[in-house]
Length: 108
Image 1 (cartoon, rainbow, N blue to C red):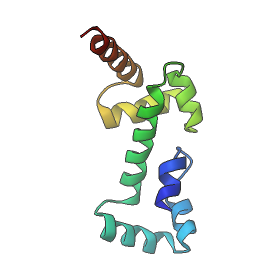
Image 2 (cartoon, rainbow, N blue to C red; image 1 turned 180 degrees about the vertical axis):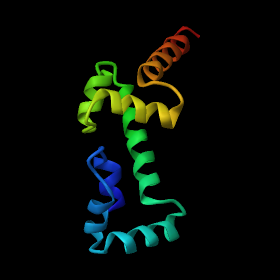
Image 3 (cartoon, rainbow, N blue to C red; image 1 turned 60 degrees about the vertical axis):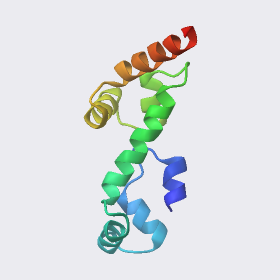
């Protein structure tokens, strides 16, 4: 189940789907997950989704809109809001910072 989430995470994956993969009720799944991983399934999903978003944003031909769509956010606005809440910067700022630091590394 964790491999599935890591490799195929998107905004549509939720706790009900994770619980269904294990065959447990949502309540039991949530409690057990927290006991084992010391974080809620929601926190885990958000971190994995953020990690995937950050990775996709680093592709030179990607756009905020295309990443938002690939990760199945309902809109670019909600994707940007999610990304900024977790990182402190917008997806566009993240891309600009990443590409400017790459250019600086090539020059040295």
